[in-house]
Length: 150
Image (cartoon, rainbow, N blue to C red):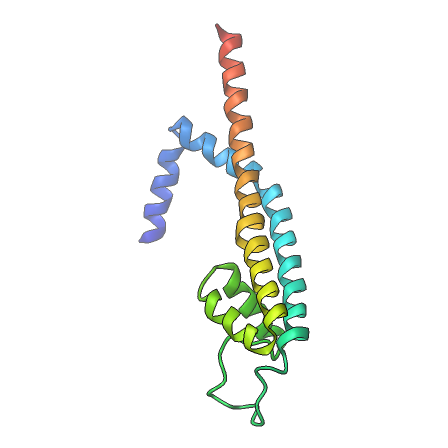
């Protein structure tokens, strides 16, 4: 039932030039988007490994099944990636930074502040810029075509 609603909207979009143009620009942005996803994944990998090196022993307890240990930690590569992604989304990153500063004040603060600056504010902004650049290119192309028709 929902699929038919979406199909109807897509069928309607065929007749609207602006929606069709926006869809075309987003399709053209896929290449830039893929490059940015690879770049973000590379930085997540780098910061996950760095977090494991800096903070792995801090969250360790005698019992590996300790339920009182924080969910966001750097004990394993999987948990490390989830923790770095959590900081990328800016969800509770200040509490994680304070926990990291308990392990090492300088490294904890530099690690988290550096990732907050590089992650959401640089990499995700670059992703948005790539899409907006394609929209701008399409806009100027449409203006050039309209001037030629006059």
